Length: 331
Ligand code: GRG
Ligand code: ZN
Image: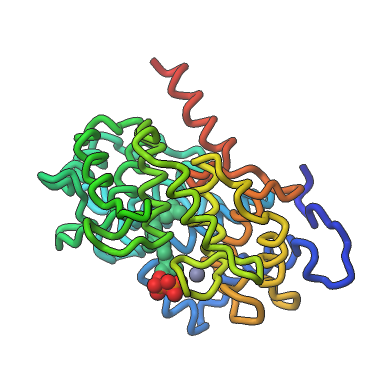
């Protein structure tokens, strides 16, 4: 497919169609405009920012326009001796940035640069007795880290280095009476954590442990009258929930429970028509996080001209398939 203005269903306003060229130049500008406040404020999580930007580019068929050699070199320069990655050069290692680094290398088909055993040992060292995961040596526990551990090892074909049954049991302990999941047992259901738990169950072949109708109903209730989705009852809609909520619905085969056209309109409405990029809500400031989740959400909705994204791996499906295929020929 061509890299250009995908799926232009030319409507009356510029916002009725995905402005691929604008978003491309916005994402490219992030790399050059290093003097901006935005760049400074996100220095500590650059690894995830780069994953968001590059995955959005790949979904728009434009990854080849980025300097892969430079990116891969920079990623590897953020690796610590124990195999884990920091959010930037000389920053502390963390499971979330290790996942982003592995995802970036997956995008570039460069997973062979990694010592899978070493990274697996790092992830194993973060698993607790109860099956949960700490994000780093400081020990904070969060279902986000369960997902990061499980996805990271799935990409490296090392999932069974950890205690998977215990990891799954712990996730199920975080489920609430409303069907949703929180940060830890007993904590309020939040769509971001729900995504982490549902995707973890998918990656470990444990979806049968979910009541899809109960959770699907809670998730479908997240759609507000403007068409967008919120992350909890009574909250404002936000483009990033087009990923957290929608991918969970796709995994559970309940996406038809929301008004997909209305959600698509909401996401397109959050585009900055001049500078490019997508914001959390119409007319807010854009950022790379919401740009990625907007494009990823549109991909899940089958928006024309975009690559399809895998809802559990959070990577283009062709990237995931290539990794899985190369495994079969390996052994
Ligand atoms: C590879 C896709 C991928 C993710 C990696 C980082 C991570 C794993 C998952 C994060 C999941 C999460 C908790 C997302 C929610 C982020 C968010 C918008 C939090 C805001 O919460 P509030 O309560 O805002 O401040 P609301 O929307 O409730 O008002
Ligand atoms: Zn958001």
